[in-house]
Image (cartoon, rainbow, N blue to C red):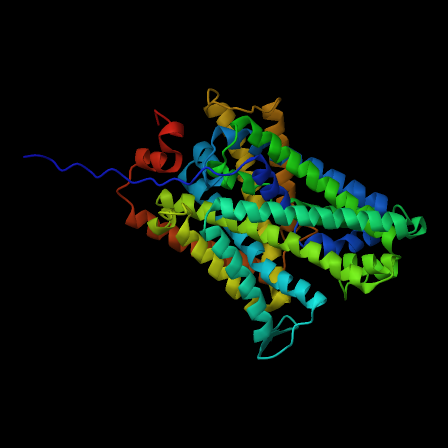
Length: 479
């Protein structure tokens, strides 16, 4: 009697279509979102211009240590899912699942917030009529008109991503260029029309410096989308690492340039007014015409769109990788026959971003804060995986190998652990109870999905999971 053979598992792959400039625009554009236009004045008020610059230099240095672990692991394992595949290789199935689920939470949370930010920006340029009152959440009145504008933005980006990574990458590149032009114009206008007296005092207090440092990590979230899209990059592997580290340095330079610009542009009472939009208001003050404030908002809107687009790419690639490995329903691991995009993941994330404006802009800040916790959990797991792989797989081909790897890994673990401490109840940047409730809700949902996947795909062997995650080129030969 012939024994039936187990069917060969199907493993779909994503299309390699991203160039060097696409990858840089993806990382830089994702990091530079909307936060700087609202917070740059606050950074200067808290720490002074020199203090704020020092805070961002410290934050960039800390992020580089974490970034170096990504820089080595990404070209070594250039596969969709990034943190998911790194932690599976270094730590195993369960830690990998936790890492993938938490980084998805981080990306989805920030992507959901971008819709309300987008509407806020449009409302500054052209006030949106308020009609169709729905409810009030965290003091913000939500109207149908407001929700529709945000939903349209989410739908457009979802369609772009649905049509393939090249479509999303082209959009990202042009929007990032427009953002960069806006920032340079702001700097030049501030130099030409600002006053050095506005920049005093250079330093405030140590407490103010610490307060700005606490905000810095969230400003650099985004370089980590590079590993998510590594499978779709059509560039030499050793260049991925260089672009990743360069993107962090470029973001630091951008933030410092914006700090100098707003400090020059307007006095403290203008740039510190949180009832408006500080960077736009400061530019309008410096130029003596409110039109310039609206022009600054247009540039900042490009930052919203690049960040929004980047986090959609990040979230959907992790979901795709988890679906492909049967860690989530297999539908998430399918690609479009024409566009070669992860359609189910894009539809899900697109739906979330389209409905998120229903919560208003105040409540969604909770998602951003809670998602920051998910990000640093992933950072910690990647740093730990980096060290474990140095020990377990010293022969793994590493197109880019970090010098002093063990020391870098230990420092990266310490940095990620410090970031985690910031958000814990004992830390100075502790999450609010409602934000902890969001984290807990996501964890419970994850437990349900984890158990369901383990039960449904219980017959899949570790060797098959290895193949599904890594493919033939990167799977270990001997488990």
